[in-house]
Length: 528
Image (tube, rainbow, N blue to C red):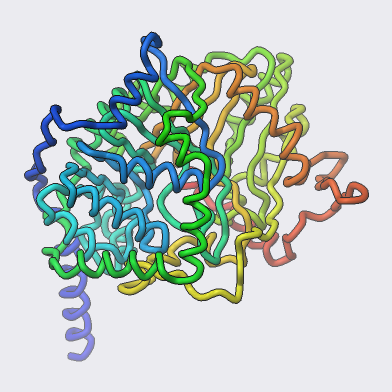
């Protein structure tokens, strides 16, 4: 009798979870009307002036400094007078996430129409505040590939893994259809050099000109696709008091010692004055937006609509040099063969990725490590970022506070932030023949190729391509190990006095090695 009762309870619980995990029939939902075009937009007028006589080109400014990257986003949000379209994979409720979310609310309060498209895997703990924001008359929020079961979300993977394993990894912020930021950074302290945790080394592109229209059209594709659900269909009804709570959280973050210091540093950045004065140095070039068909989120995209194929076609065959910078690098046998063939043809190939200690996803390293010897035998130059402690880290300072921290621990949601201040490579950059440069969200791993939706810019600029490629000769040797092969692997680093050679992989203990080797034997490379 007891067994039957337990079985009945278990089956009832399972049936409940299955029912809760189901998504409602999707509808487009209502969204606020865009303000009339007669409204003045300083961003639009200044962008139009700068673009005069440059038909078909876009003005590009690379954002490699994390504080610059945050300042540029805040300034675009604060200067917008008509529209804001934001698309992100991760949005943490920590210091920078709270400040930027509050700036978005303030923009709507002054009459800007806001659309916010977020992947549901990267917003834990923010349901209540996002629902409240969605109730604002000028804010519309959609959730990409949502979990039907809101808590604990992880159970959703057990119930609907094939769908939920596909995520929207895109990152873009566009103001007044006049200026946009596209690249590798999500929204959170580790991406902007704020807080007490690890720091991601990353790269974004601020752009004006022709390519902004392309980003706007791409946003529309994702906004209306079958994977994007109106927040009202997914989240519980928002309470207006959550908006007041968001405003208080932003004020608290800005007033605390660490937050005040961070904001003061950001306000002093030259990029803010240069943007406001129209003096920001721009490289004008032909720029192509390359992105996945959003149907990839449902596993229904034709191969011609995938970023990987479009990028390979746009890049063509490198003739002299190829530089790859990817925090998550899992080439697989096919990738190794392609790189080896290029190397045999005389192409100089340089790769920068994370070392075991600097990487924030250890399984990715298990997918990458088995291919190191084959790459080195093929003549590839291979570098692994050292996990140096970041200078911004203060282990004695208080915890980061924000709207997420007050409700649930969203502010500490990244594994990088949980480690002791290590620097992690997060950029996704390709340079080709010192002539072209790709910057975006696309990692060189199976997940980006096959599962996640991605986007990025291919920039036809020898000046910028050389600038980024040059880091392999200047910065990279100072911050990364050069991996070499002489029978066995060795890791070489430049010391302050003399070079050091490590015969054993730095930071990898015997049990780390055992776990990595065990993971490498599992049939999970396609998931990495």
